[in-house]
Image 1: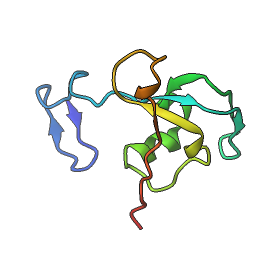
Image 2: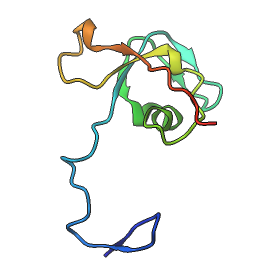
Image 3: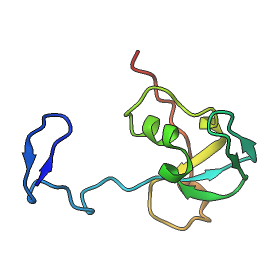
Image 4: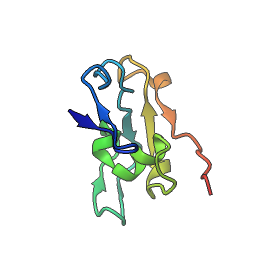
Length: 101
């Protein structure tokens, strides 16, 4: 049995989300080679990776789970629509998400 984090109630196997219902992870492409002072990682320009693997802080801001954002927020493009990675029209700028506070 699983327990819900928010309510502490038990979850049965029918209540657990399947992989099909989860929101797909966003793919990002770095536009420039930059250094992130907060996590200490170098990001090489024109490389692609999953947002959740690239930066936890960026992923939490993009999913609207947290208000703080990564300093490299504007240095990448995001792709959430399926298609070829080489098609330029599928890559969009990171959205301007206004904070909750």
